[in-house]
Length: 364
Image 1 (tube, one colour):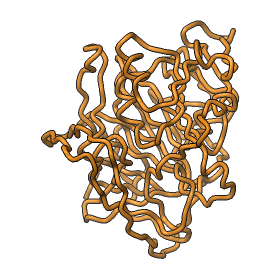
Image 2: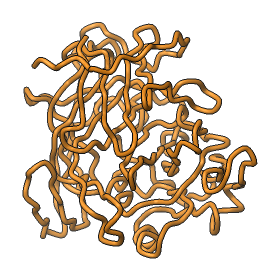
Image 3: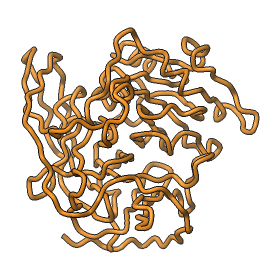
């Protein structure tokens, strides 16, 4: 398939960034088939012109392809510390208002989901392998978080609260709820920074938030399929992607020297407060439908179960295909147009929850 080159021209800064993993020599990945039982009946809402269906059975079985060799569930990297691989995921809702930048912790997250909110975006940064100290600025949650983050398997959810409807939805979810302004304030060691104004100045210590897990750890499901060591990336050559999110134009440009994608907002480098330009080994663009939230008609809610279009950018290539997700407890299944599973580079991943017709892949 041929993609038009982006009309946006951005000057890349010469940055010495560490490579985010993955090799490019050809070798087939080894997988094994397992069945994963689920016990919760879920209403599955499809996007991209797919009709809604309801799962009536109380127990279903789904065939899921997973790597034969266990890896870190959020990065696909080899397991070097079993304790880290087995600990509960931590999600922190991070502000993306201009007054909140540069943020702290974005370059330490294993996965970051970028959501459209009210004429802007917000990040759900997911941590397991690292504990960011500090992390923020932390802002409120949305009803879409409950559906989006279910496959993380009862994660710690760090936020600054929300309206009554959102608060009820979060509190009644299976999350370990960590409001850094109230019930989790002491453990999170939360504080207001003096170098910026409220509400864009609330931070917490990730190491403290990780102490909020219950007696039994609930590690997340593996979220993506990753290439084996030595396997070559497939797809068409691409230098990156432009995505029109609400209130901000996002660009990701591939830096061959580091093997990472560099993030730009509005044509300017988007920086982490202490770790340089925001970067990622993979950029996954999930094309989703947005509907008004049931608790706030002004708040968009991404429809993240069902099926839709996907663009995966990895190792300087782009793969086009479909995403599929049966219910909120399942991870996304990403399938290329030729029917094969899409494999990511081991390392960190950013997921853009993009509106329909808002994604422009760049040419080589």
